[in-house]
Length: 334
Length: 267
Image 1: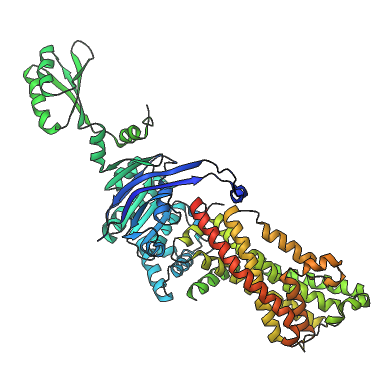
Image 2: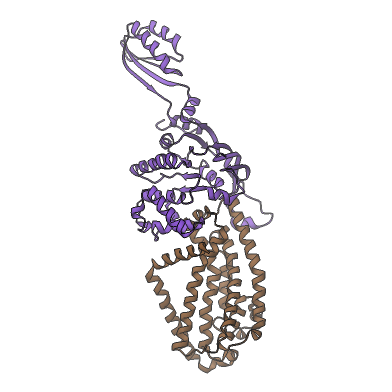
């Protein structure tokens, strides 16, 4: 079975808006703006893949390239095994859900909207009616399907957008910042729908873009971090963490710390740092790749040297730190 | 066909959701007809020498002009409007994410406007014929339908060229502006082009509407046979077969350019 997505050095440069000047022969063209810069990545069938990046990173442009809405400047890609030039085949096998709620007819009902788009997907009247009912039930909107779209709250509009993306039973669903304008409750509802119904039950491959780190961490099997058009890193969340700082960070608050203890501990862990709070208490800090194995001997050394452990803290590298490191942006609070 | 019906159903539901606006446009027809009826009474016999070819009655002449001008307006603007509206409402991107071609989306979006215009034309003609003495009993309807078909093709071709500009420029297509102005001034909607100075009459012959209106009036008011309308029909055929391929090429180029620029859904 072909991969859901394979891209090979995919690139897109846009000319700056020139209006009518663009038609004048010999007119000096404006410099190009690079939106996607040599992107190579693979997404497997059934995978929930996250593309994480700050605003303007090129995430939406990459999705539009893969949906054949725009033409690449260089490189190539295959979507569900189809080359980007096979527009109709790709469109029949993917769905696109954007965070833009304007993309519906506000004075039509949810059902009328879906039936219209089902017809554009080539479904017959009977097929359309059946499929519309199925997807409405999947996103739990069947009860209000006959009310005008404009009466729906934002969370429901977004779920209807997902229902529309599923009308033709695509193998791959692009979700472009789907929770952008949702409140925490609606976000949680949508996350549940994406993870438990679409990915797990329906088996649809999902390519989700977001600039919300916790969203990517919560939902995605693998994440790529994109910045200034380039993929800076790609992997599972633990892989990305390991790339920035291997292992976990430990902090021990010790009463009765002695210099002899420090020498013994330095043989066990690297990068040991001691901060004295007073003549009794001190914080010990170190990072260990094999934390579970190393922690027991460390505690033994402390105890056998007469020290008393008052607190133990461990923390993994946050995805935010990884993101900040890879995009060159300061992490929150720094 | 299924897609065409889906567009018609969508547009019907949207139109029906603005009921007041729907009925208001038909009230406009009553006022327009009344205005020209009284204007015709004011002109009386004075206009007859210019209108001999059409039977001499100004009201009958202008009624056909204003009724069928609706087709020119729809042909010129509805394609560009449908793209512009879909760009601004954000539905264009979603429609383009289906395997339906852009050209199908644009063409199907204009059909409702044509149906509505046909309804308006029928109201114009019915008002004139039933209440205001316009005689179309001897009309050659077959010839009128042929004229109408060729008019729709040639004006729609100009409209598709206008839509190509909208696809790239987003606002302010020059085609609709230029041709709608020229159609009103030189096309013979409100007066026969024979009253224009010679050089303007010469320019008028480069507009399809000139031939459409002359042939339509002769078919409806004088019942001319197809053979007598042949020169005007031939001109409309020439407009159609030259403009239609040109418009399709222009539109294909505009869509390609917008996909390269990434501006397909910008507005």
